[in-house]
Amino acid sequence: MRTIKRLRAANGVIWLVIIFLGCAITLSQVILDRDKSALIFAFLSVCGWTFWYCFSTWLFGMRRHVARFMQRPIADLTFVDKHISMNRLADVVRAMQEHCEESPSQPLLAMAAGFDLKSLRVSNPTIDDVAWRTVDIDGGKLINIPENAVFFLHIGDQKCIVKATFENNAFDEEEEYSNRKVNPLQLCADTIEQANSLMQWLLARSSQASIFRGHAVQVHAPFGSKSTTVRIVDRPTATRGELVLPDEVLSLAETLLLTRAKHRHRLAGFGHSSRLGLLFYGPPGTGKTLVTKYLLSKLVDHTVIVPTDLEPETLRECFRLAAYLEPTVVIVEDVDLLATNRTQANGRLEGLQELMNEMDGLSSSSDTMVILSTNRPDVLEPALASRPGRVSQAIEFPLPDQQARLRLLELFLTPAHAKELAAGDASELVHSAALDLSSWAARTDRASPAFLQELCKRALLLACNETDSDAIVVTDQIMREAIHQLVVTGGKLNTNVLGFPDAESVGT
Image (cartoon, rainbow, N blue to C red):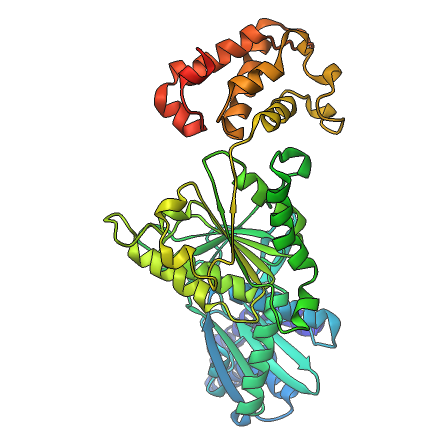
């Protein structure tokens, strides 16, 4: 094989040498006025060119490799193809690469551009060099994907030849993959039954080899496009120590997701799947997103799917990926923007209908959990929020009580290196001798955790501005200045955004 590769690389030089020698000999005979000899040499030159053309076409062509591998004439083989999305095709290629590493296979070949497997019936495409694309799938974890390879596979006692063709700018960006179904996957086998069976095997295997499996992905539809793009992003993370919630709220969320995921195989033994629809609701900034991040950080074997918009095509692709990559978790935040009551004028009926259809379409054996969140449960579409088949449990995230607000203030004013210490350790609270946290916990009634976090951050910023030393001192006066900026200078809009009732409640 190495010798043939060297000959193929030198094919152009061989052609030039043959042509040069033939022309030189013929021209010399003409100059010497030997017309008969010139004619003979001209004839021999043409024969040499013809012979080398036929021999090099056979030697460097794909037909002989296919016929030798399949052990039957090309005309007797069956060819099938399937047009699939770009991200699915990349998964199929990865699956074939893994299979080649696990079982005997011959060296990877590539077919010249512009040819497909069916063209072998009437032509002999030249073997080309394999073109590799390096893809970053996880912030520095690189994989190589061949874009024009022809795979010769042994699958059990069967053999097949597969070619995957990436078309239309296969990878627009290294981390993005389109779902536009214009990329042909071609397979060659002995019979149509074998071809269909092997195609199904490849598509099933591609799910396990997917570049998205186990990651967090965002799905979005470019403006004006009917296709969607999938991008791998950093997986959301949070620790339990960051959560200050009523015990029953956090315990219920952990039981419904973490315990269900842990015992999903045992549930399957009783005929139950881990399919679940959860609705997190409560005022803005009460920890719905943070709890979601914490739960996802524990579900390390689940693929996380997040739509970046609520267009019907985006939602459709999210649930298609969810079924393809099970076990999965689909996150739809601010679902009230989509699922407002359909009697209201601003309801987005197409997106709403798509979301309900997709949630209904999850099979009884589905291993997909859907987490919806909203700040406005009162305007949710009853068909979405009230039907058990769509939402199995709603969990309210209330505003923190005074004791919880005290814990939050201590958490947000504790240096990062001291987070692991017991909450409320006065020696680590930014030298807070001049700060009465209990008083501030009482004065911030009905404040959300998001508001308290911003209040502490603003106070720390003001304290840093007063000294260049490492000792940061937050006092009551600094807290008063920080809360004045937030609720008085910022006005009603700022307090609404951060989750705080009004300035009168803190006496500013």
